[in-house]
Length: 133
Image 1: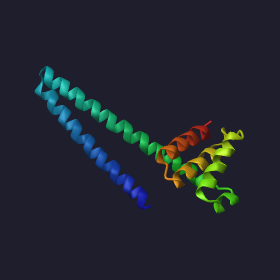
Image 2 (image 1 turned 90 degrees about the horizontal axis):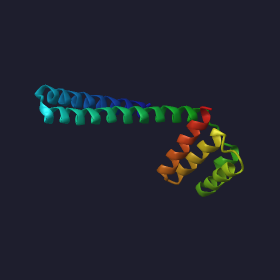
Image 3 (image 1 turned 30 degrees about the horizontal axis):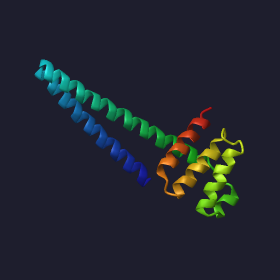
Image 4 (image 1 turned 135 degrees about the horizontal axis):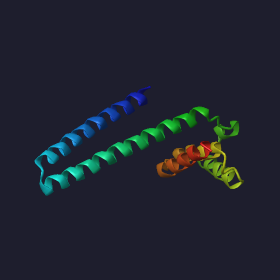
């Protein structure tokens, strides 16, 4: 629950930031002239990028949370060490389970246990993609 409140707070802060950018863009538009219009366009692009990135990350978090709620780890995997879990997850994917979202999500959890955030996000994105088919 604490994480949901934190995400809601971040979204509200981002909304306030976006409102401020919109206000600044409006001011540049009202100033007119080539420089004013150019600056308004630049600020508007920043505003759109802010909204797009925020929306994309919130969707990623929601979808990853849905997979997390549906995932039940194998009983043997609970007792394994981090590196062994990672090797087992990779082996499952190499054995032809690359179309099973559970195998990708298990790999994401193994990456996360190894503190490889980039790998964990990649595997989570793949799990979300495979689960939607």
